[in-house]
Length: 169
Image (cartoon, rainbow, N blue to C red; front, side, top):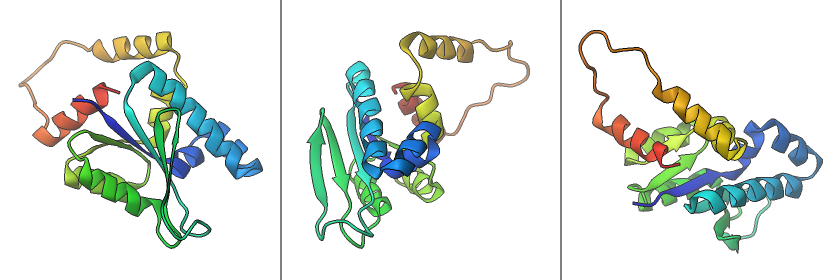
């Protein structure tokens, strides 16, 4: 099963120090830098990626869709927040969707429909900023644990599914 990454665009930009500085200078610069990072990530992992940006305050009357470097870019329509578009996408593609956001409401929605989520800052640190070698080192460190003591504990099924999807990132 392939992963469908749904990115809360402005949320990721506002959680990143570097992208936040670019965004403060010029809105388009922040978006362009984020899309460049995601394109590099997509070249390595080949996941389906959809990036959703808010257009509710100054967007077009209709939802705008664009394709860049194999990614789908969606701008919500005037009067509609990106959160609503993300919720629609999650409901439609819940089995393979992973949403990247730090917005607690969307995280709860994703969990409720059976989709996985990862915080924007964590995704940036682990997948956008890390070089191939650094990512491998981090995953090796995560696998080394002390021997188990006491009875085995198994996570609930929903959490096991979420972790399984996140490992594919």
